[in-house]
Image (cartoon, rainbow, N blue to C red; front, top):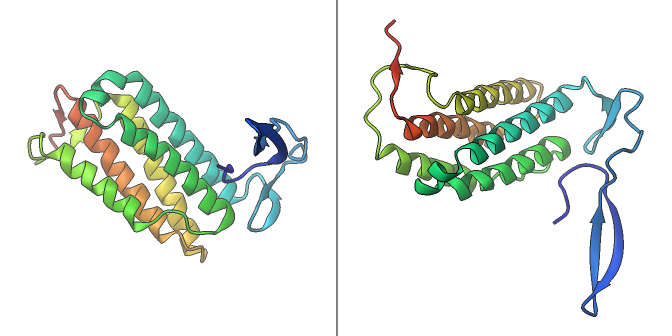
Length: 194
């Protein structure tokens, strides 16, 4: 698979008598030393560009989700969501690719699958009647907070006439998924008495 964005150098190699395209990514290119970076849909832009800031937030979200997946690996496997979280991490690369290139990559089927997983997890939880305070599994709530920031940044870019409709819905559902996941892993909830 070709990475969604970044500098890619291709070399053709032979393996088991077949030509295989090897993908090599150089870690440093020195092209960003002037404070700019490549945004495929527009060319070189300052690293303060809102799309680049959004890509950084998506990367941060993916790192938090990876941390959650590794920290709670046993519990997640019991609840059969471990593989789905890895799928989400891959989808976040697709989100980044869509932001970088402008080419739609997040589809309604991704949103639907996320909703189905949320519904499945919710079946084993008590009905929610109050706001809950982030208390247990705060790493998941931190990931959820970053997810909300990504959503806000996406909406801000949509207001500037960039079309990220499916991404906004997917990220909104991802936030709901993370909230539900924190509840699922329990064991108790602190209710806000406001």
